[in-house]
Every structure is written in C-alpha cells, then in structure tokens.
Length: 283
Image 1 (cartoon, rainbow, N blue to C red):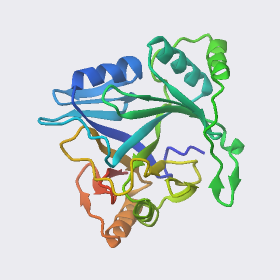
Image 2: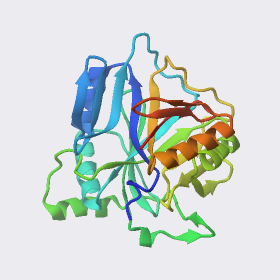
Image 3: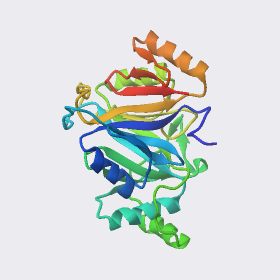
Image 4: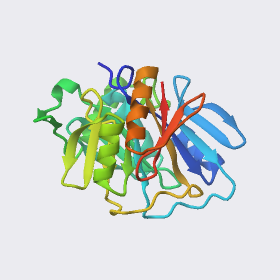
C-alpha cells in the first residue's frame, strides 16, 4: 500500500516564512531539485509532478528565527527508490553541501539545512515487509548509512541527477514541541494518529495505517519552549490530507472537544497544536 495517498491521513505541502525569497527559491531549485509550480512577488511554490510540496512566503518585517522555539525540526522528502537517493547524494556532495546521514532500519536518510536553517531530510524507505514490529512499536535506530551501497545503486543505473524524480512526496514532518504529553493527546485523541515509537520521554513518532511515521515530535529544544512568533522566519504551516470530508469533520469535532480552535476556509481548514504549530487540514 501507499502510505502517502488516501485513505491514509498523510503529510503534504509545508509552508516556510523566508527572509530571502529569491535566494531560497534558487536553493530549492538548484540544490534540492524541485520545479517551480507557481510564483508571484511574495510567494513561490515548488514541488514535483506539477504538485507543490514547499511554499516559500516573504513578509514585511520578518525576523530571523530564534534558537529555542517550537516549530520545525525537519520536513522529510521521500524519494521513490534507493537509486534516487544515491543520485542526490552524489549531487549534494558535488555541490559542497554539508550532510548528515543515518540508517533508521525502516529507511536510509540524508540530513541538511537550507540557507535559513530549516532542517531537511531526504530519504528512501525500505520495503514495509522488512520493518520489524514489537508490541505495536516499529523498530528504528540511528545507525551509520551504507553510503557506498547507496552510491553504487546510482552508479549501476548510469543515470545522472536531474532534479527531484517523479513520485517524490512529503514523507513526514518532525516538530519541536513544548510539552510531549500535551502534544501526544492532541495528535492521537484529536488528529487520530497512533504512536508507533517512543523515545524515553524525549520524542514520539506517530502514524496512520502503520507507516513508520508521518509525524515526529520532540522536546530536544527544551520543555516549555515558546511558540514560534508569527513575525519570525521558519515554519508557517504544514498540511495533512484526510480521506474525505466526513473524516476531516470528525477530526475537527475531536479537536474542538480538546479545546483546539479549527478555522474553516474554502481551500482548507486550519488548527494549531498545543505548541502553536499551524496545521492545514485538506481533503
């Protein structure tokens, strides 16, 4: 099954408030390899297959983001194959981009930051049949990646990197939150996700339909940190796509019962988690 299409509730477009719109557009085009989907003087939307995955927005009076705040840890771009991970690994190396990497058992991942400090993961999933589950939790780790093996896949294909491939999706979103228990209640009882991995009171990973995670939550920036100010650069919103109008409405009812506000517009509904992270609810 695909964990990034209906009826699964999955992550989609991520919005970033940016200080340098032209510079960030160039980075996401030339370094990450997205195509421009639409743009105007204050906003650029980029993605693949004619579909926006990243929305960059410039605003008057925006300030650089403070260090200790709730908001984006990283958004994670899911590639369709290990070969594609090898191709972009070679490309990023040739561009002189500083990278981290990990083998998470369920996936192989590269880590980097954009010019304004927003975290980015680029990864490929192993076949779900290879994932190991124990008492409802999926086994994940932070092991060294087999970079040589990843690059070999690209070399065998004899294909050069030419941007983000067709079939690329927003795999998951990982957030800094101020209180893990409050966040867990909101994301499970409100949004309907299931905890699939917990890390000693420091981080939680949640998913729908037994993906390894659509949402990551952590308190690595500290407990009780403030929400990201509206006039600070960084995460503007991220999007969750629901199976249908009925499921979105049921979810909104549960969120309101928890005391969360849900605002309805023609294009999307909007809510905020207890740490102030803005979520657009789409169908």
